[in-house]
Amino acid sequence: MSRSPNYGPRRDGLRPDLVVLHYTAMDSCEAACRALCDPAREVSAHYLISEAGEVTALVDEPMRAWHAGAGEWAGRDDVNSRSIGIELSNTGFAPFAARQMAALESLLPGILLRWSIRPEGVIAHSDMAPGRKSDPGPRFDWLRLARQGLSVWPEPVCGLEPEWPRFRTNATCFGYPEMANELLLATVRLRFRPRHEGPLDARDMGIMADLATRFPARRA
Image (tube, rainbow, N blue to C red):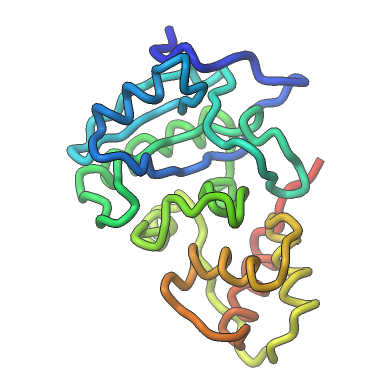
């Protein structure tokens, strides 16, 4: 039975095909748990993972937790109805603890197996809500997850000249929503080139070309 009261049925017969990763942006896991279980806050997630690696199930997986908010991925909105939400206790400024990452790596395989979610379906909150959300942020180790087949990481294509139309087309193919050029670049870099700055360059082009080629989003 769900611990948080903040959930409902998934709409239109949708099933999870995404896992959305978050950080809590709160000072403690206990405070985050209280917030995620507070009916007045109207926010929740399926799982909360503490810095010590304790996994708390808050909403049953078949139900629609209220974690994603407005946004879209692969041209489809109502991400809450088509995703599993995982909150990692973190202020947004600290490294993610080793035991916390290990717990996430133990939790994800079962979720992906139960719902037939592919690794490219494990995304950041910032991916589907660009400009509005930045979690799990630049300190999160996406490469570590990808090495275990629990997410994806690019093998950049070389020799591509910076070209906005092609970059945008590839980003849309991978799943990113439509947005202004600079916001798109910042969103992609937040996940795949954290803390890198400057204009669109060949590496950005290569990253997006590889992701679009190997991991095109499944669309309705």
